[in-house]
Amino acid sequence: MQKYRFPTLSSILKVKIGTKYVWEKRVAQQNSLIHLLENMYGIKLNFRAFSFYPNYLYFGMPITSHPNIKKAKLLWQKIDKVFEKNRWKTHSAYKYVDPNLDVPKDFDSFEDLGFGHVQLLLSELVLLDFNYPSHGVGLETNLSLLQPLIGFSKNSISRMVKGRPGSLILKYKTEEELLKILCQISKRKSYRKEPFYIKKCPNHPLKAVFKGKTCLNCLFKNNLH
Image (tube, rainbow, N blue to C red):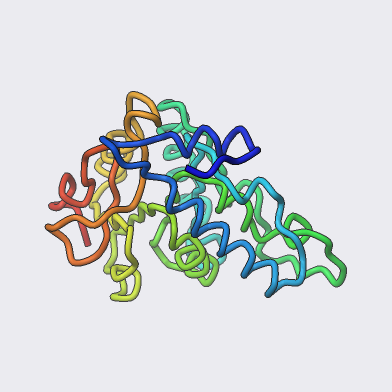
């Protein structure tokens, strides 16, 4: 294994299930993605984005397109509490993002742009609300392609979203049902014993989301879109 200077990288590259280092490939691929983003925007990303943090969740949602944002925030707050109770640190976009701001004329970093790209890449797991999907959620779906993604929606989901590798897209009828599933997903012994990662499962045509040795797409097969 290649040795890295950053403590976080050194730690996560040692995480393995059986004999396989499950995060090694993601780190290498994310390295390439970051350089592509730097070239496209003409600025340097925060060096922390070359790694990511276990127990860190990025939670994205349709801030601009939701018809009842006040009611939606109540659910988002409940979801935050579920993950925080299970020892996750959450970065929930509705707390930090103002989608009505213009793109700044002068910027030196991605933090200046305020797009949340760095926070997304820093997360072990991505959670997206696909109810009333927005352009921002669409971008987050694509930008997080190297990360395991949990999505949820009461309504039908487009073929393109369902066709994203490494996704677990949940359907639900009540908030209580959704919160129960998310509690089960987020609860684990430790990130070393049950890391979230993407892997091919013979029961699914595309790569699935794994937690430790468990394929979540198989575990929640009756709750999938």
